[in-house]
Length: 441
Ligand code: FE2
Image (cartoon, rainbow, N blue to C red; front, side, top):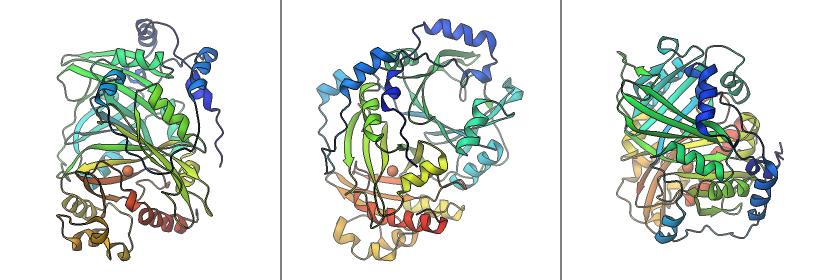
């Protein structure tokens, strides 16, 4: 399927030139709190001026055929980091049955119950379960009725990631700054209060129907945010040692990678720190291209993939077909001990891609000395790669839905700041064998 959404439109729509307070008043006047996150008025397209500005900056060229790590110029970053981010705040999934999904993430991935919102807390149209594991926060949301944005999202995409929320010091400033730079509004700044303090949220759109929500919680002491209550349950399986979000990868359509790179550069002040072309990421049959975007302090990294021509269908195309559009392909979850974590996850029923034994035959020749024993890595199917700063260990789950869409990566970094380029071939061959089994290669 070819996605030919006009590129310029992604950048050309600037926010309605109204003050956030006006929007907040209008929103709150009509809607219950549960709508606030999802049904704010859409922005008005003021296409001409912004389009011209952005069009001038777009240059879709294939100039870099080698992966490049650009040196960080601290002076430039300080000047350019107009959107200081403190990291990932939470990831919200829209799912068909949040109660069961919460059970899955607790049982299979070791998350803990944290908070709940639903009719009992004043949210009449949806429920959300909030799960925590160290710095990871997942929110699982399901609508209680049809005929709303969340239900439509699930009907179209299946279970998937809607919100990649970013922690900021000032959510209103983050929204204004990105809006002024061409972001499309998703949520005008809104203040939520309860007896534990105040959370300020705002949101902008990114690829597909995915959004970034800016979360300002410096004045909040409660469990998650107003509208939620603490969720206590007798069922509390132990954690699996997952620590924080290392990176989140987006799959975008044909010829859409560079426009989205420009979006992250121009609107959010990110930098392109690594580039992989279709020669780096290809097997005998299929290919993709990828650019890794990082914010100034490196806390937030968003690789962007697009399909590339190959003899057979790219894994990115399969995702786009089954997700029915662009979206988040995988989230990499960091651990401090990948052997223990993956052993635990596998025992809990998480399924991982199988890597051919031949991968391990000359692994140590390729990557040099590593601290870990080879046998458990081979037994579990953990991959190893080295860059100039150290090495990393990683493994990829199978999709966690019936649609071949979202999956998870488990990663342990031992100095390396890269993304496992040396493993791409083995990994993508493993993905292809799964694609073939599904009849989608
Ligand atoms: Fe990854």
